[in-house]
Length: 474
Image (cartoon, rainbow, N blue to C red; front, side, top):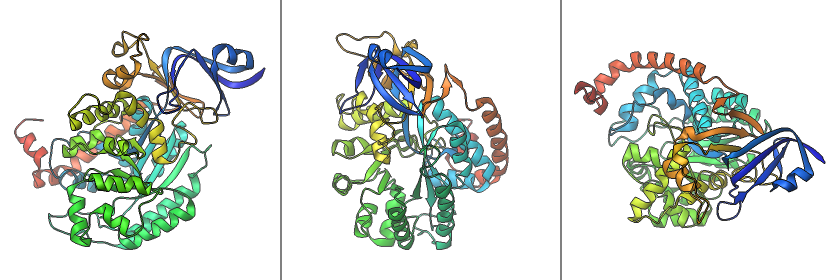
């Protein structure tokens, strides 16, 4: 018999193999050196393998870990400060950014990563600057990272309506230097758990010269470009004022639309523009909760999937969305898809589950290593608590009700156990590689500082949140 590191015994498992959800009954998983070496009926695995550790997951639902394809983890320190308002970026986030320290951002990132892992996310798709603390934390706790370093030439200040952004190319050069530092230290290293990507904030924030340099470097370094794309009317205004073109046509004019590009949000995209992205091989990330809360819009993520594009799901940031919980994103994805089409058939639960797992991995270009429970891939696996009220009663005949209950009823806390690369990060709801209470206390300290520092500007701007405070509505 072959001895392996771990055997996971399952009863109900969805592997995400094939075009559906890959349901398996009474199969076990053999894991060695972080990778899946066998998935077979119990009796076959028992005959062929013995293990150092045997995990009994027969009273759980076993799934691939979730892929959160787009996050801004550092915003977790600002949770709850930018909802129910207009001018989200300029009136709410910009003043907060101005007083938020490097250490505060780092504390927020650690909290967001912990939150995501405790809700079943195994791949953290972070985007931003000052990312070293986040990557270090991901590495330390054993999670998987898909990290995009933000690049922009636009000077970071509050712009009035009708103002075109000021560019300073030295800002982008500084960001590219941060990218190279992280790329050389982490990319394809750490058991291939961490990938480093270029993250131009948007083609309105980045000069054509910097965009060209990023593309050249991405091809040379064989990495991806992760960019906000047609995310709102503000971006469309900037692009038309500067170039006389919307973002997607502009990028097509400079040969930027190909399989190196991952477009985030696509909120303002037409069907014709989505068809062009699919034709050119561009992948996308849909963040239903964030865009719904910030803009009150249903972005066309489901539509691009129906056109044949690779589309994953993301939680974006908790200063807009308020949580890093992929079960929440799956529910909103299916709900919004039905509302947009005006029927209860579109965007079924199983399709949203695929977008949170294997389709998200395809969109990020990491489906060779994760996204499904498949022999040869890494063991990124989660266990769902079937005793939770939201999962009961259980039906297996004439149909299985696991996926509808998971997507439409379950809370994030239904995730019981999380494994990445064959290593347990959480077991029986207890984090094993980080101390959540310590992270929570650390973030609160910085939240107190930020609140005190931003108060004068908050009242000076007198935005919608300030007005709600004056009316005792918050």
